[in-house]
Length: 303
Picture 1 (cartoon, rainbow, N blue to C red):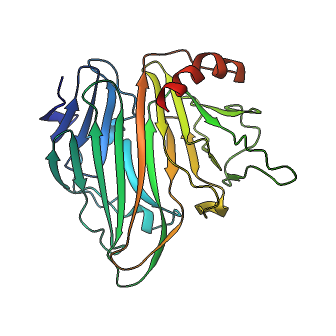
Picture 2: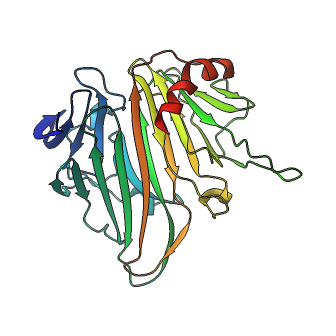
């Protein structure tokens, strides 16, 4: 069955694009962003979090998270990272792919583009993210792909298993507000498990040298898997520790993959690919043994 692409309204955004096959659908707003606001099984719930009080709002002066999937550039900084993107974007459709393009950011002068491809069958989505430097001078940055997922689940982040003999094989970045004894976190031998707790507003953020190239999130909408291609030996943001970062607070959890830090010359381009998968598996893991038994068999299907 071919992918269907149609115009729809979604939660107050009138000019949205719905991509669907017989299994999953995505909704991309063209009123702000770029943002992908929905990914899920057809006629079932949304894997992503939507910030309901922000849905449908356009033209505002302050930056809004909205929820869903977005594209940023790292390292994070104020005000550069929070230039409002509450304005219409350009798009075009070619076959199974929707290309969304933000106008060049005012003041920052970085252009953001995402190509979103849905397979004819199954759940696989491929996203090619691009940043283009439109300044008259070099800019050092990392491409940063962030997915805001719905509350109530547990994330699994694999730890590096490379045998480096007498040298360390992993690095971890922690933010000032992140507590090592946060009860939402299980620091396992093979995996880090992070629970999203709607009753806990205290934020938590960690970055890790994830060279396994996958992370996943299990909740009542299924098992969402995000794959990416880390580069060993490359310099990454945030003390070079972070091929992957994750953040949580009371209303969501954020899954963030990054490209290496790159010095972009004027009109220079950096790209970063993610591949998404969704499985109809709603068992939430609590231990590393749970991950090995109920999660890893699905991860192996994404290679």
